[in-house]
Length: 91
Image (cartoon, rainbow, N blue to C red; front, side, top):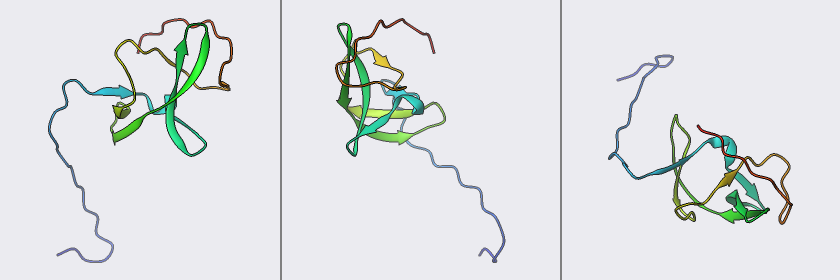
């Protein structure tokens, strides 16, 4: 048993999610209490709700709400329908 003041280190392991979509924590935002990301919609910014799974050292696992090919925007100061000129950034 642990005594008061002692520390315990715990590592939890789960199944490997080889096709998991992981988004950097900084790209996840909340609008009106809803978790989501900002997406490219042509030349406009669009907020899209997502379902959030586990948080990892690499970012947040997104379990729903994104489609293949979606381009996620860095959320700094974006507004719905805002005109944008997206550029690709490798992470």
